[in-house]
Length: 269
Image (tube, rainbow, N blue to C red; front, top):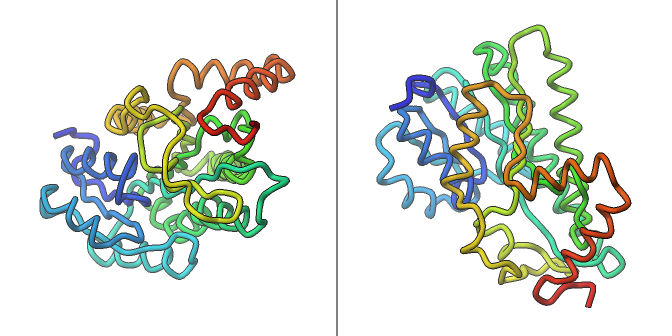
């Protein structure tokens, strides 16, 4: 067990698969009390069966404010506190904006941005009381925009702006706020990504076996929580993309275009 996480009450959204599920498993192995939240309750319960008795599964659609409020209430009812909130639930997309049904953009903002806002709002009184941590899992796309992912990039930029502001507002009262930006990580997010008409993409354009595993990703997440880091950017490619975007934005735009154009079934073709 990890003494830092032992007995801490941790809420992880989007916990039915990918980074969220890997985080729940890791925190549970460290002796934390973990509230797993996602829409897929049965899937979470199946996964949680081997995680021990200090794990609860709560159905929550983070795009719904009332679900987020109830998630915090039920967690506090169970354990009396909240120490860490990991806003991980997210949705991606893959389509050119010119072809996009605007409802897709609304959905992305509802899940990625408003989901983070709602959960943080209702957890905040408890996090301030515990001097705890709130994390937003964003993406390199929240620092350097990705073409054919306009709604995804916009929502992740918005989450970063929201959390950076929250950090400044609570600079003097012990709240830890971390923006966590994985690079490409093996997960279901690309399979579930929405296309121009709002239907699921169904398959990933990337070779998932060559990407960072979700398990490796969440070990970095845990490290950032221990160190109470303000931000973490993962993978060499991710760090290079953020640095290049800041120093040479025009060059980065052209390189990003070329990179996405090489994807399988690229929207540019």
